[in-house]
Length: 392
Image (cartoon, rainbow, N blue to C red):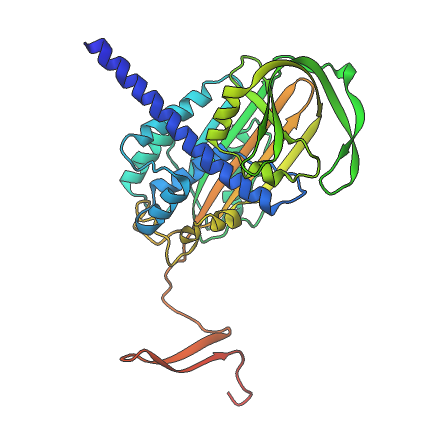
C-alpha cells in the first residue's frame, strides 16, 4: 500500500509541475507577443522562462492588490500551497539537462532587512539567498551584478547593466540567468552553406549565409484562428531533450505578429501531437541576435501598472522597512546559430527602488500649490510657482 501511495504522490506532483510550466510558458509568450507587436520589422529575442522566473520572485513578496494583479496576469501564484516546491523541481529538472545552466539571484541593499518569510520562500522556490550590496555606490553595485551575470552565462553577457542604470534609490534587484549550449543532433555541413538573399520584413533584401540540411524532420502545417496558414519544423539537439521549433507563414507578406499572437502552451502541445516525420530539405540562415529590452511598457499593457507605482505597489512581504516598487524589468538575450548548433544566453532583472524619508523638504525648484476647503473638499485656488519675482 505504501508503494501505491508514493506512486500516486509522484504522479500528482509531476502533473502539477507540467501545469506550472504551461502557465509560466503562457505568461512568457504573452510578454513576447506584446514585444513583437511593439517591435515591428525589428529583430527580437526574449527568454519567456527568464521573464516568468523574475516576476515570480517578485510575486512571492507581493501582497494586496499587487499580488492580485500579478496572479491575474501570470495565471499562477507561487504563494499557493505546494507551488514553491513545484518551482524548485522545475528549475532542478531544467538545470539537470546537459548544456543548460539556470541561476536565480537577489541583490539587496545591505542596510535593508528582509522579512524572514520572504527569505524562506526564495530559498524554497529558487534555491537562492540574498547577497548584500551597497546601492549608495551604484557603479560598484552594477559591477557586482554584471559579474554575477557573466559567471552564470559562461561570460556570454559580461555587461548586462549599463553605467547609470541603477541609483542610490535602488533597494533590490531580482535576477535570473540562463545559458544554453547545444549541438544539433544532425549538424549542417559547412560545405553546403551558401550566400543567398534574405527577404526582410521591411521589403529590403540582405545577403546571408544560408545553411542547408536534407534529413527527416518532424514537420506540420497549421492554421491560426484567423485563417493564416503556417508551417512548423522541429530541429533537435543532441540527446533529443531540447529542440528548436521554426515557425513561418506560407505567405511572405504576413507579419510575424500574427503568428506570435497565436502562441500558447496549448498550441505548442497541439504541434507536438500533430507533427509528422517527413523528409525535407531545410535552409536556415546562420544568425546572431543580441537583444536588449525594457519590459516595462509591455507589462503595463498587460495590466501590471500597480507594481510600478510607488503609491500603489505592495511588496510588504519583502520588507517592512520602506515602501518598494518596481522601476524596470530588463532583459538581454544573445543567440548564436551556426552549422554545429546553438548558443543562447539571457539575463533578466527586476529593479526595485524606494525613496528615503527626509527630515527637510526644500522647495528650491518649481512646484504646484492648491488651497483646499477641507470640510467640503473644494479647491479654492490652484497654481504653479516657477520663479520668484525680482522683489522677492
